[in-house]
Every structure is written in structure tokens, then in C-alpha cells.
Image (cartoon, rainbow, N blue to C red; front, top):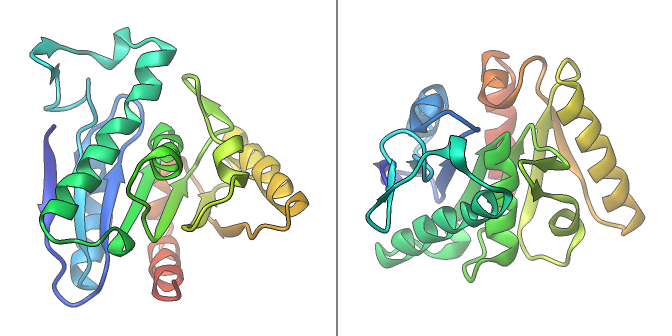
Length: 206
């Protein structure tokens, strides 16, 4: 699995960033710059079948051929990234799983089902379901990590998904932290100047 990695300099957390369907680690460049400026570390992944991660167990893989089961297995890449950071001396409570679009769904799945539990999960334009990867059960399940959602009203499916998830959380008495992404889907919300500062302000309060 290929990735961009930067150790934290002055801030406590390392972000594991997971891209959207058909994209790659390069979509995080704007966010990486801001994380670096703020002293945070990051590990931005090429998930299996994307970018430079086109082999798995010695076999060629392409996301366009993935079944629903294949997509659900991609969360293991995020779990593996967390395990790699842990071996490098990063405590799990100093990790933040951050994902965009299907990467958001996968990040939540990895946090909920994986052995290592991050301090927080940031979901950019999550969906109730993308490619068979669902969020609702993990969103309202008992967990130790905090969750932040960002979505834009001009991105109808992600917006309605957040409303559904928020109502489900409210019924369980759970918090539903939210940032209005202004416009766009996934990392395109970073073009709205207020979004990244709002995320970093939220992280500072964990």
C-alpha cells in the first residue's frame, strides 16, 4: 500500500486520510499543507485498487472490478495503516481516521471494527451506503472515539445521509458534531475557506 507520510512536529495527532472512489492520495494535498502548518502528522493512503496500490497479495487489483464484499474489505487497509503507525510509536489515541466519500464510510468501519481505536473519525460527505459499505450501524454503535461529519447542501445524497445519521444518533442520545461544508463533495469542500480551520478547531477540542 502506497502513502504519503509526515511525522507530527508540534501537534499531538496523526491523520490517516482515505480518499474517495476512483481517486488517490493526491487529493489530500490542500489538507496536508494545512496539517503540516499546524504541526500535525498524516498518512494519506492509496487504498487497494487505486493510485499506486494496484497489487494485493501479489495480484493485480482494480477498484472498477470490486464486488460489494471487496469494497467492505478495503477498510482493512486503514486498519493496517493504523497498525503500521502503532509500530512506529504512535499511540492509537493519537490517531484520527479521516475519509472522503466512500473513504469516510471505510474510515468509520475501520474505527468501529478494527482492533485499534482512534481518538476521532472525520467523515467528509459520508453516505448511508456507498458501494455496499454502510454507516448507520457503526455511527450509532457504542464507541470511544468522537465523530465529526462535514457535508454540503448542494451534495444532496451526503446531506440527506447526514440528516439521517444525525437523527439516528439523536434517538440514541448520542452527539452528532457537524460542519457545513459550504459546497462540493468530499475534499472539494476544502475549497470553502472556513472548512479546514473548522475541522482543526474541532480537533483541538478532542
